[in-house]
Image 1 (cartoon, each protein chain N blue to C red):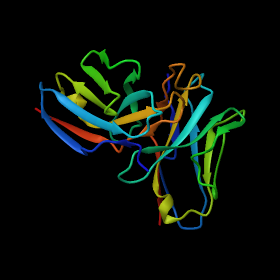
Image 2 (tube, rainbow over the protein chains, first blue to last red):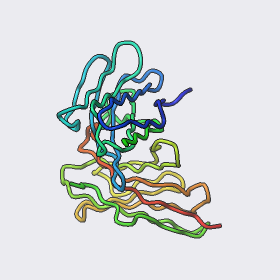
Image 3 (cartoon, rainbow over the protein chains, first blue to last red):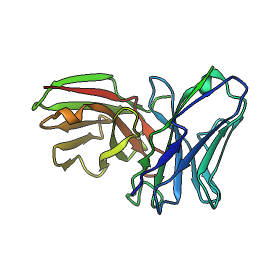
Length: 117
Length: 111
């Protein structure tokens, strides 16, 4: 019964490069959430996706960041032209249904630590 | 803008004693609160939650108390065990999927 999987666990990119972070939700889960944790801060919501749909991207920076959750394969968080301020831990979570009112808790992956040099 | 605050970055407690973790929030729209536990190199794991219609929820050694008028909640762990050493995050939502997290409290349980 595999949990939420994220890869890579650590990613080093130079300024200006692209970063691709992958998330495979728990088996049977069709709701995926991405969070970012900056140093000394709590996790902050970025985006909520269902298969082939972006439901809410209100927490995503307007530029350089994009997310997708295709019909087949993992969810991808893409950061183009990375800058030093993008250095953070990026966590993915999944849930069986829409989390919150229906009582479904979000199950988190181990995170990807992105370092921009 | 930190809507959820955990003002104690760390807590050290003797094994067998009570651990009390505190959390304050500012958004009056929050009505669902959760605690997550995180070990190094792992993701946060759900621990316990409470709805705003309650003021207490208990699950084994873990009890969460909610004081809505003070916008304050706390997590009690009794008795504390060495395996409880971890980072604890308080989180809140307005009954939807957007969780707002505090910065975490690192708990160390001393033998």
